[in-house]
Amino acid sequence: MIGRLNHVAIAVRDIAKAAAVYRDTLGADVSEKVAQPDHGVFTVFINLPNTKIELLEPMGEGSPIAKFLDKNPDGGIHHVCYEVDDIIAARDTLKKQGARVLGDGEPKIGAHGKPVMFLHPKDFCGTLVELEQA
Ligand code: CO
Image (tube, rainbow, N blue to C red):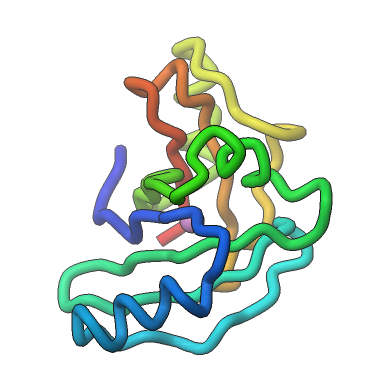
């Protein structure tokens, strides 16, 4: 069902500082900071030859990554994103197997303009999983 690793997301308190680490210290190709108001975050993408790193900074009080940063004040790996060919078929198959889809169960448009959904970390080895329509 799952295909390519689309990205690994890292939550941080200061996205400019984190982007500078990847750009200046690690010498990576770093995108501009983009607001994602539907998801309550700012994003920066680090483009690597085989995948991407998504830096996330909370936007506003009710940001879904605020609690994560309370528990992980230095930042940390927040989720992994796998590509699927058909996100609705993937969701239906996973739900039949008892997996929990977060939110209202409908895909939202993600940071790349494609439908995404999140799966409960307790069902996937303690890791929040994002699925993105390939
Ligand atoms: Co993501």
